[in-house]
Length: 208
Image 1 (cartoon, rainbow, N blue to C red):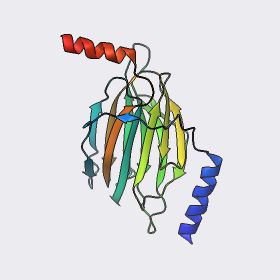
Image 2: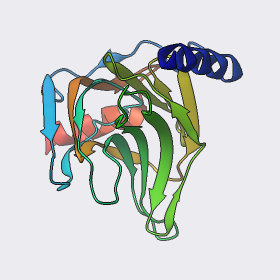
Image 3: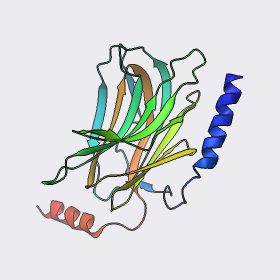
């Protein structure tokens, strides 16, 4: 019965939050050899393992598959995995992290997993709320972001969350705390016409 209740809840959520237009999460041309094929973090002591890398110029898409293995019960913190984007600091705007967060299940039937999207700054975080998740099979997480800072995240193609950042996105990262997760086939790239500024940067790099 618990699995049936979960399925019903997910169906209702899918109805209340329709999938975005194809343009939001459309096919993109990935950058080759950007990340390892697989990154595994096993953190039974809550040390908080991370991996990060600067994004190529003009990137506006990212996708990764997340495979849950096990959760550890920390003293206070939830066992979580994160895929995050970093936006740069300016004179008037603090640096920001836009994170797709997956809470590992900790109940007997592994039904209390959650996903959410949050924006973190030095002063705190906010986001559009939680949604239930099924981690009995690998979960694909897709990012898309626009020049004006709107970040859309699809969790498994069923749940879509959006949030806005204020400056240019420059890095992507992975993190795990109090759990064991595997990040598979992280790809970044671009959908749409190339940015002229990126061609200029590439030419200058070649010349100098």
